[in-house]
Each structure stands twice: as structure tokens, then as C-alpha cells.
Image (cartoon, rainbow, N blue to C red; front, top):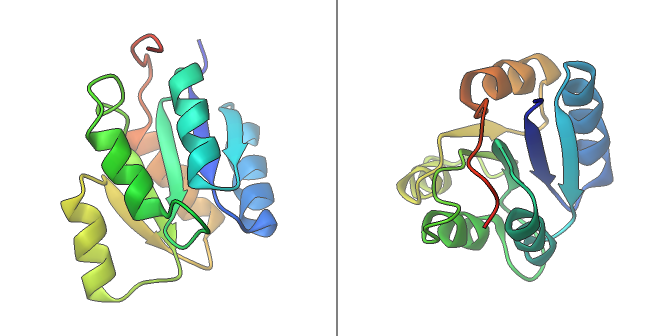
Length: 128
């Protein structure tokens, strides 16, 4: 079974680039443009990894990560932040919420692929 990755970003260019790189590598891709849609996907599909932007309207990435890590059905899913907010305080805060890693924008496709290979769950538990 191929692993599914959820990419959450309100920037279409990031969604397109990450989706292309990861789907070419064999991952199944779901996308969301805000935190509320991300949570809907997470509650409906088995995910092996979440790539998550920090700055989004409504429910930001920090809120989504907090919701994932606070949910007993979802906490096991690795979260990688993708953000232009690369100051040490934002990175430390994201990691303190339980993120596995924090990648800076603009994204580097090779780095995204490397991190996906490192963190993506091969056999995620069933959806709630």
C-alpha cells in the first residue's frame, strides 16, 4: 500500500510543486488550502505524513498541529512545517507542538522528498 501525504497550504504554487514531486516519487497526495479542510481530510483518510504551512487564514498551521497532536486517533502522524516564518522563535514553537521537522520556504523539492522519505509512515493506523 502506498503512503498518503496531506499537503496543507493556501499557496497554490507550493501545493502544485510539492504534489508533483511527491506523487512522482509514488506517494498518494491529498491537499487542503486551510486548517479546517486539513482536519476534515485527517478525520476521513489514513495519512502517513502532513506537510503544513504555518500562515493560513482561519485555523493556522500551529493550531492544526496542536489539534493533531492532541487527538488520540491522529497524534502518531508526523507533521512537517513548511513556512516562510523561519525565525528561531517560530521554529522552536512549532517543534514544541510536536512537529517532526520545520522546512523553510521557498521549498526545495529535493529536501521535501528527502524529509518525506525519512518521516512518512509506511503503514499508518486505520482512520478513526
